[in-house]
Length: 481
Image 1: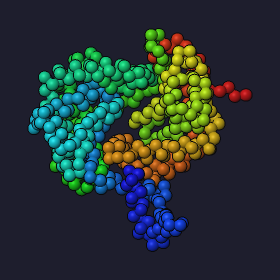
Image 2: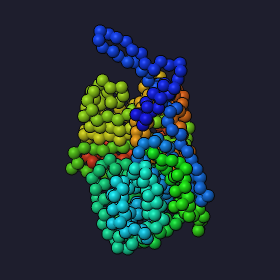
Image 3: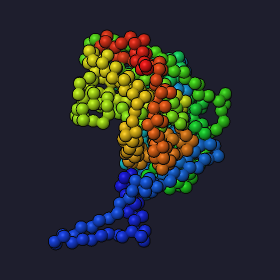
Image 4: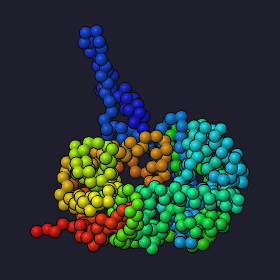
């Protein structure tokens, strides 16, 4: 994206009669040329607009045309593990695996060969609230990419043989996830924070469900949730919006918008301040996560909490820097070797979220590390400064722009925002929202969601030194004199 923006800004300079094209100066026999470059606000305004069209069946088409020779197009569906129940938990992820195993018009081999011959990539993923299928290809192959995506979503055969074969694949994937301790700790954190609700269940589902799910479960999930108003066809790169709308009408216009039974309503997921401990003294390091309940995507406090999250940031002992880093917590860790790494996170859902910290440390440093984490949280609530907030705002804006470098992340951003907000927030608007936040805004938001609140805590590994819950709860406020 950066290249595109600079190019657009250069054109802007050439078309402006008030600006010199170049200045030339001779120093000895050398010449230097000084060209005017685009300012940051100009680069934001030069981003192509996101065009949105709604089909008769409620399916939305959203795209951004950057004129490059490649593109990414995908289906973002408002359906994930949060829409499951205890009996079919894991069906959304199972369906993601099955969707590429052949359709009524293509066998699995024919589908794979067709994608390879195009030089394209086909991929998918499942989250707690969304399921995504997308393709990356040359812009000239956009019609074929859309047709393939429409085919796999509407006409997958879901054969019994393939279902039984895929059970083993998913069970092996579950075993691999168990070795990724960051994934494990976040699953445990959701389990205790949202216990008894849909967000407390894992995306992959329990082993017994994977062994018992049948074809009818997959078909029921599709017929219940894959409806026009809950689907966004998102595109980015070299994409003509009118062409994409025509392709959507042709291949996706028959997706229904009516529900056979009652309309599925997203159930509220209550947050519970609680803890879960999985002690294993044979593990070399302790993995700890602590979080409070934050807010959903569209809440006004989302931006201040994102800035607070950026203020703490991430750190790893391999980064170097020691005490010479801006983050106060990173400075402490770098100087005293309190932990191996930490990562501040802000996970948003439709109506709730988790704001917190995940860190990896030696078993004897757990208590001290937790003390400094909570101490930093209280400082955010009471005494964070304007200069710190300014730094965090600049870093947040930089990170957001860097994350939109390429057609795939832009396509993903469009699809996700369309499902979360019902529109695509422009970069100038997002920049203005971030810029409007002050130190007082951050202090007030942190006080509302962090100060004197019951946290959710998850610990895995040699966690004997992890303080008892009531003591952790006592660290969520400062005694004021």
